[in-house]
Image (cartoon, rainbow, N blue to C red):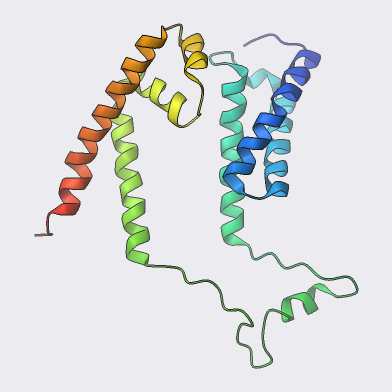
Amino acid sequence: MVETTPDDLGEALAQMRSSLLRFAQLQLRHDQLAEDAVSETLIAVLEKPQAFSGRSSLKTYVIGILKHKIIDQLRLIKREVQVTALEGESDDDAFDALFLPDGHWRSPPQDWGDPNALLERREFFEILQLCVDKLPASIGRVFMMREWLELETEEICKELAISSSNCWVMLYRARMRLRECLNLNWFDHAASPPS
């Protein structure tokens, strides 16, 4: 466990807040939801400062929590239809306004697309995750820090105590292994007709 005072932690989080908010806005494309995700992240860190063990930088730790909060927000968006009442209107009136008198949608929901394409996309990402999991631990960690956490090379090198040339070699090896794994486990299978 890393010893930090509440003031030090609060100050460090305050300095990170704007970059966390930008990251959340890019992911969620909604200012209020991004603000909610960042606020929930900061509260989570401040409520349990002892959970930060120091095995990574504070920024990496906080971004990890934020990513989970963003995923929660995305799941919530997919499950909910936002209906807001206008001034002087009840919630029931706002809900009823979505439908015509005969019960049909006033504006039908968007087309859900091709379910087969969505399934294929989900399967692709499952294969990609398996390929990432097969990477050697050190290479996989560098790859995830760069591509998932979007850390700069300098931050990765500092965190892992490696040179920038070593970092780039590891990233190159990770990408080549992922390419090979995807060629074997996805593209070759997708190109060949089912038997």
